[in-house]
Length: 370
Image (cartoon, rainbow, N blue to C red; front, side, top):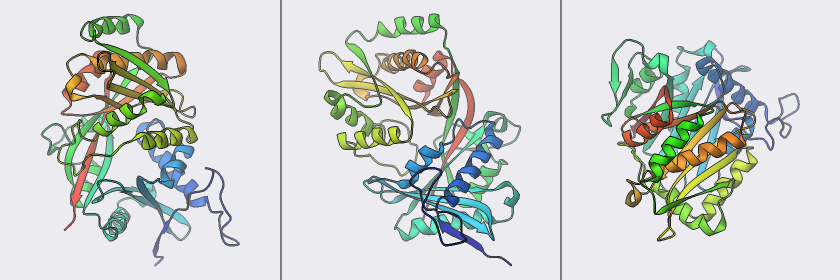
């Protein structure tokens, strides 16, 4: 019987090129391309689009890792056939007891035990690096999440996932606990101008001591320290349920590294921030990303209002400003995708007011070792 071979994927210098391997073997980028093709096929099968999938350039930049997170991608083959992949991400500056785990099996090899083999391999990699808390994520389309059946409730107390769904059963059987459920939502574009104007008028009346700033790609130098402080609070001020995830340390250098990575990945960014006029401090921000390879969809990234400035409709104001700019800058876009913890009712209410509709539910799983 042919043994399953699990090998580290070498990340090529470009998405479609690499250094030659041994004579008679595929080039050094073959496994990377195969894993990317498997991921894209899975996304098409599951969603009918690549809206949630990293582009090849994004994937290449991501799997290279950086000084803040080490990332490992592994390909599993039987003979010459790709059975699946698994991955391990290792935070390096903070949360150094944690590891991110992911597993994907090709359709022809599912329900044969290979997924469990890949999971055990990824877990062993994390364990050898001293990680004792493993986290994993899997999103389910809305129509699957709403099928009749019993729900596995999240430990956060908000939301749940169908027990019979394949990823739910797989994670639970492997000892992972469902800590939190996030709702994904989609906003159809363009948003009617009258809706934007009405919401802006209502919100502005509560934010007389604030003004909205916007930028593309790189934060202006005069705001980068303030911006990095807000980004640090994304790890502490948003709901994380029982996930073993502590504060992240952000500074100007880390902001610049993230911005440069996006540019190398071909990702365009829009940021809107609210500044407190009296103190000159940044009080809120929101980020939208767009990729030319997936032109119909904009991805909503972080949105944060610092605790001491809440109650002034700043979340709505910065989102409105960014949406206006996004519709001008990316006219091909037909929707915006966003994710919110089910218990984050305030941000969900803002998105519902804007016109976002449910699209799916993502489970955030955790397993503690030892």
